[in-house]
Length: 322
Image (cartoon, rainbow, N blue to C red):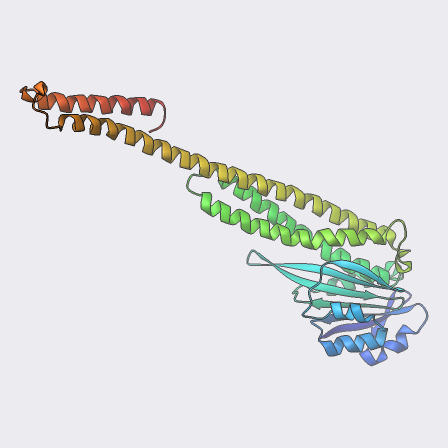
């Protein structure tokens, strides 16, 4: 679905145009066209391919059904970028995708499976004509920057969640619930890692050293995006290490709790074993057992059992087994 199609010249907006007018404005000097699509179907992508001369492989990767790993590829004098968008819905992270085609006289963005709009990016760019004058490469930067900036709140949400879990990890009886939450959090962190890691590597090719000709005047901006990605990536690694430590601590708590239960069971088993041994001895049917003929034999036997069990109970309590 076409969101908007706008022609710009010398960094300033000329007007909204129709798809049929794209080639007229794209051929003008210092002019480029910025087209935005959402959940584009095969027919729309084919039309854009015809208008801009897009590479077949790039168009294939941009299809609605094909979610790609974040990347930036160079096809001759054009660039094709894939970025993963992350939406938080009811505490869950949903993945989407933004594909951006950039040439000398056009910028085409295709948003798939994402609720995040980029109208604010266009408005901000139009308020800075001195930057928009740098052409389609600045549009690529603006979209990259918008996507990356939306990772920061997600990172903060994950850090808050791990801090909350750390506070509950020593609460007795919460081990199973904590483990489930830790693995759910680990999955969310991996989604963010898969979005940030490959993109950080790709953006690194747009500044310093050999860069595509389109990005020659915008290297500083891409370096800024790369710095943001590096910060997020470092935070992700920290959270992953914290989660790993928390899982190990939680498993240790489970093992400690099991050990406490085993000690209690062993202590009670030892106490009842003494009583069982004494009862077993006096329950044997031997003819000559003098204590059985005594008037005080039965109370003495009971008192002996109680004293033996009481002594063991005292010792186990002192050793904190009970």
